[in-house]
Image (cartoon, rainbow over the protein chains, first blue to last red):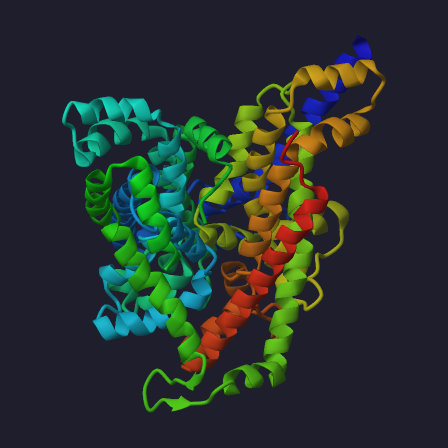
Length: 276
Length: 308
């Protein structure tokens, strides 16, 4: 019994050590973000500089227009997520509940599009955006990635688990597909929609390659990752400001993970899937 | 054709032809946004990518049909060959290490450990934060004079190698950063799978004298193979698409030592403005990913149990 207890204590101590190593880079980033510029590189590592320079966070905003980047990212991520959730819940309902010709074939086609990596699409997508006159626009940041089959697939799985009797009773009472979709299916699918929302929001928020390509006027249409990348290549990188900006870019997602952890774990568990 | 012959039979069977047609009209409304979006933004560009890859397609100026010219150029381009090797090396290092770390920790953090919920949240944070922010933090960490260098020299009196500037260290540094960033996802998937393993079976195995390794091998492993298959397949696919880590940590350097296929696509398309070559490289990546996925799916019969 005592050896069992000892093992458990050792196990917990080791786990805490793992957690500290894992957190190291983040702690280092926070500590650097609060140091004066000339104390970032010291011969021995220090957690704190001679003062806690909260001013760095404000300075990051003047170094680059981060306020603008945050608003752009927020707008793109919120609008994109809305489109994804609306479009995929509608098509998921059709695949799960409506009977129509060629349903299976169309569904296979939807799933097939999941195989195509973004990298294959970026060249023709850029050309398409050029043809539409959308280069350097919010349209181009939002629409091309707002119609993935992933959401359709995920929500269809949930709709299939809803007992058909629920809907049939409503239909007998004269409730059409639109009303039963809005009144019965959508409210029931709330946990699945929460998972899809979080994954979509995060992937828009962190997206880097496409904005790098499609945005020309970074000061005007730049998103947060593009703004961060502005820090490299600048002469005499200001590491303390860069870390302050990186930490600020992480805050929304960290909050989301902490607030929605139960939904996330459950969503992963039930679907066995994840975002891109 | 097949469709037309099957559908009426179904109608006769269900005897509700008008209702079926009505459903069809509703379905087209429900499907319109997704179908339109996918057609315009995925199906059409996929076909278009193949077409563009057959042309000399500058961003500005005249287009010229080349046939498979871009593809033969890629085969003979030493940079592209190096880039494919680099990507392969990244995948070969990243995928097994990611699975070992995430599966190891998920097994260790079994249902008996207190505070595992906190660990799940903790390890998941870098997965969800913008990749660029994570990479920035590690760039500082790897910098000469950064935490790794300063720590080694002040505690052990040795200088760290110039991780990002050395052709020997740059790729391992990128892999290490990527594992820190990404293992939390598989960790969560494996944790969820391990939670499903009945404690009673593990306990009866223990009573029968099975050690921790045997319990894992004969009780846990068979039950989590579907999750393992899913996780390794997804990790393989996404790791071939590595871009932001080398782009920001090393700019592909030193030389082209850490340049990856996606970086090559980006450079050809948006630095050298050769869309045809970029598109061809993108298709090569697509074919590699499809091939690897197909091999995975064929191979799964040998080791994945769906019926336990």
